[in-house]
Length: 313
Image (cartoon, rainbow, N blue to C red; front, side, top):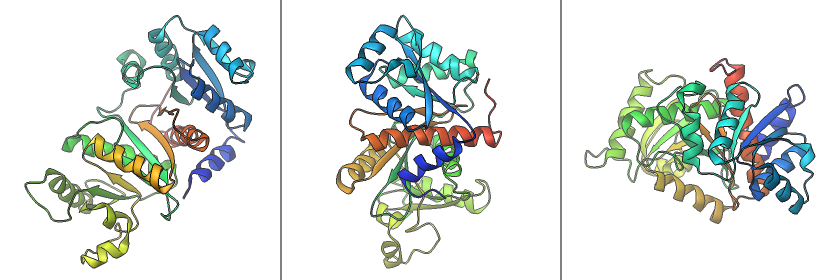
């Protein structure tokens, strides 16, 4: 079981001794992305295929003192072609991870979901923010703070399935999942509490397999056992949560960024739900967070291939 961001990177390096990873970047003319894949290459984590404006890519590499010759570069005349060529590369099995460069997330994912590539397997793609929080005893996955604005009950089911995939990739065979709400009381006037109650009962009855689910729970009850004990709540999830499922993109985003800014959490993010994972890094991410995000995406890709969940190429 992987418990911290640096362990995610170490695990990918270990697996890389028997498999050479390849990352493909869509519209790669982005300084921060180039710096990230440059570090990943130098540390022996993965090779990279850069898709985009070749002249601009080489110019930026020179500006940030990276040797562009260490990468394979595929020229694309515009952003749309860059997305197409990058997605085609992973669809043909020539890369393990798709990474977003200088383009909108919506455009890239629209291309991923193009039926001609055969990468769509679910109706819901979701973002997992896997956080290494210094004051928490293991990784904490917040989902979804990046994709689904206000998930329906059916979307929450698929968000949970996607989070389970990420958990398994991290070595957590039976993840503990919290359905977050403002209260632990089941209240018909609070939809999040009703969703939490129903989903936890479904898990109890085996309708959601190989997982512990509890809800509704508040954030402090999810991560601090003393809070749940004070309220008289029993169960194996409280104080030991692996995954927190939120009810809005704002909720997930605010929790994740608060932990990063005020608790010193290291962030690793990945979009899951298609046959290949998608990695996004931000210019505000630390160097460690960027490497951890790429490494997390590669671990998810390895899990999907190793378990035969999806076939690509």
